[in-house]
Length: 320
Ligand SMILES: Nc1nc2c(ncn2[C@@H]2O[C@H](COP(=O)(O)OP(=O)(O)O)[C@@H](O)[C@H]2O)c(=O)[nH]1
Ligand SMILES: [Mg+2]
Image 1 (spheres, rainbow, N blue to C red):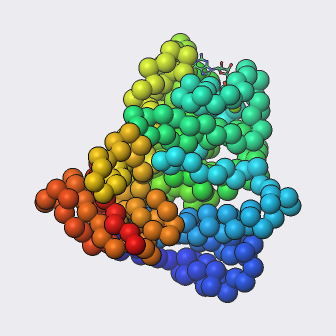
Image 2: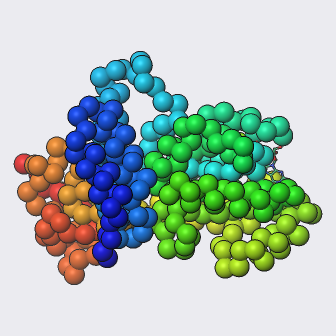
């Protein structure tokens, strides 16, 4: 798919090339991410930019040992992917993160009880997805720093309160904000940045009427109805896992059975080289041969380094 990059993007890329200090580079890369058109054709490029950002941050952290530039809105990625929750006060973000993970989040019936992002790991089958609870947004205030957290995510989960009178306004504003900041594109379905939208508190009586209004105003919008209080959240767990868009790859040591319990996860489209790097950063250079069970025609077939892996593949790497 063509990337169809815009002049704004090329300008941002130019600024990156000119950047000298790590800080300038981080800023330039963030800018590139902000203006890059969000669709399937640029997915790979977006991934590369995120990788560079992560590497720079790692470097920065090592040098400063976390002293001067600690950013509480930066949440280090863990597990198969990172999904950031976004929503108004009291929509149930913390409750949901608490229900899906073992994180000790603060749930309260007063607004702004969450002041900084907080991560928890959500189990799904044999992998974990990182969920990030966040401080709320409102028409009057979006916490400074939150946009950075949002941009770093692999996917977003927008939460609205189906029991609240201003349920529709919550959805309107949240989408408007994310579109204005170029996080999501107008066509929600055609987004390289998966964005789930869920309406919580459907156990409340008022929720039916509120959701009916949303259906009228947003025909065709995929809105998942949940109630953290009632539970039944398994389907959401799966949707969240699917949103991070990864494949699971199982590693096999020569002469041994593969480890089917702890898969490595790669972004969809990941290759043998990406897998090698996921195991150890020296591996890509040391890699001699690779064999695949699963997506290949034959079991244990030798493949090239740019071979694109598929969900469930078992891979044996032969390194120097
Ligand atoms: N009725 C109902 N109340 C809920 C539900 N989920 C959360 N709450 C309540 O809504 C309030 C705000 O929840 P919280 O998770 O702190 O919201 P946050 O501000 O978005 O993090 C708390 O009193 C929760 O107990 C739900 O599904 N139904
Ligand atoms: Mg909260």
